[in-house]
Image 1: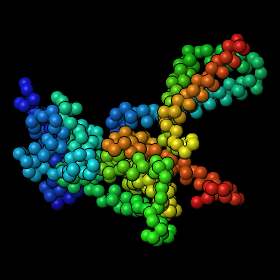
Image 2 (image 1 turned 120 degrees about the horizontal axis):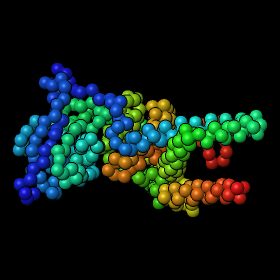
Image 3 (image 1 turned 180 degrees about the vertical axis):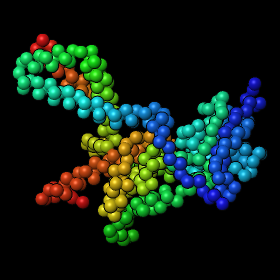
Image 4 (image 1 turned 90 degrees about the horizontal axis):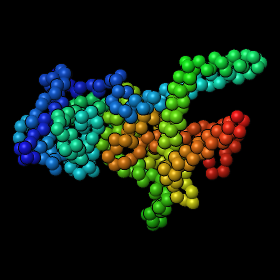
Length: 253
Length: 129
């Protein structure tokens, strides 16, 4: 059989909030193309077979972070999950784990977005310097301190891999904590104290049990597990320093 | 109208693949290390009781059951050590001369120290023997 005539079975998660009380799985035969990714197969389904199929996607190049889904039980961006990886199939496609489902593969991201906003993922200055003084300078070494954490595209695959987020409603989760740490490590930022109360709380870094799968599934090679463990070390250091009757030089916050 | 499907929570998360199972074994390894500490404290307490009690305790430890227990503990201790060696570069940012030390170098350094310390202990044991 040539690849032109080959097909693969997609088992697609279906849930319609207006009519379904429980989700179901629907099987479709889709053409197999060696260069197709799972998102191509879903787009073919939506265009040719069932226009009601719902999912998010945008850039098709692993940048926008919209098309994350569970593919055969593993969190993937469907735009870089090739059909050939899963042959001979079937390929099960489901919404990302750990989130409520709006419809089919569309997850409700309100909780994630609120937590992301809460940690103030932007540069905070105690006092803005005048434009006449030029930009805030930063050395390559200072940039290297946080650069990998800034690669996060908010795809939430790390949340789908995290059993703590699945079970603890209050847990801020890997990406939010990694982005908080990204700004805390930025030499131009002065917002560390504003973020501390939230990220040093139980539902922040201390809920993390360091399973580490958040980092393994990240399509942009961000290491949220590292960000969280580093923040734990900082919080611990800070606690012991606070017990001292004096502040050691260069260690005060 | 049912509305959005609530988030699903499964207690079978640990069985979703090897990384999750290894995580559980890693956490469990702390129990094995704790059991070994108890066995070690029992040994030390027998030293205090005198040579006869200590030799009786050594005879007891030669029971195959204790060999199996110690072999299992040794396995867990290896897992405990190797997983935490891998975790160290994630929790520490070490800079030398303004440049970050690569994780592989940190892990290699810890293994080198481990092997070195083990050789010293082995040498001490062989000399005594």
